[in-house]
Length: 318
Figure 1: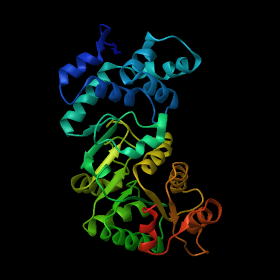
Figure 2: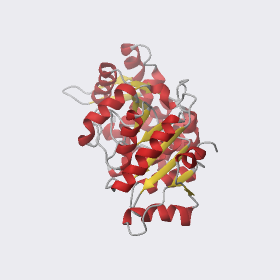
Figure 3: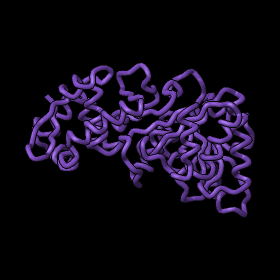
Figure 4: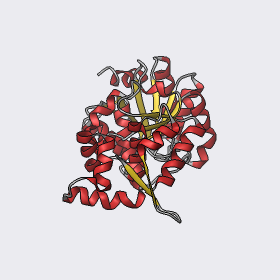
């Protein structure tokens, strides 16, 4: 039986089963166990993913917390997990999910996005969603519109026009909620009466960046924000990197509108390529460093050159 520990005046053990019974449906034992995994492990931990895949979330938690035979990989994982395995934090997490009305998705749910299967053992333990979770699975083309934060007027114009055209063609616009190209794509989708989804590198209770608080609140009302992190978690370099794999897996294609060679959008494009998702890039002025990343994607990584909305729409047709 899976346990996590709580250290206070008296040390005590609380079972995942008891917590599930306390909160009732839809907080099944499996769901609570997967939420516990989001607390104790970083996203994309393949060792944890292998254990969960082979044993199930509940038995895998037992194994790591001391119930299973020792081996080097599990020993390293256990060192990372044990300091975080506190029932007080899990209780706070369950309370936050309930109070804020977040949707929690796990692989056994009908609403679990099929594209996440492509991540294999690096798939999320669970997903937290604020807003309309059906946007992750509804029958509509989904495209991630990405690019640099320090966007130029040219880049913003291209993102706005292409996004508006994609919305008119029934696409759901995914983005990272960041400044620059992503923010423009979200705004263009909203202004065009379309649906848009933010894939967040922070927990739902830690909207990032803070300068987009109003935009994120609006997206949560009419679209959705999705995260694989507990609501209280702030973003880190690792979660920014791993956000790229999640965004790519949730969408049918990735479009990079404007990017320098060090832009995080190239990470998203790389994840998309690894997952077999089409990648497009919009060419820009050769005099601008914010064109260099897109040029590199086209010349060195086989990205499709995109100069019209129709070109972008073709990416999602396979």
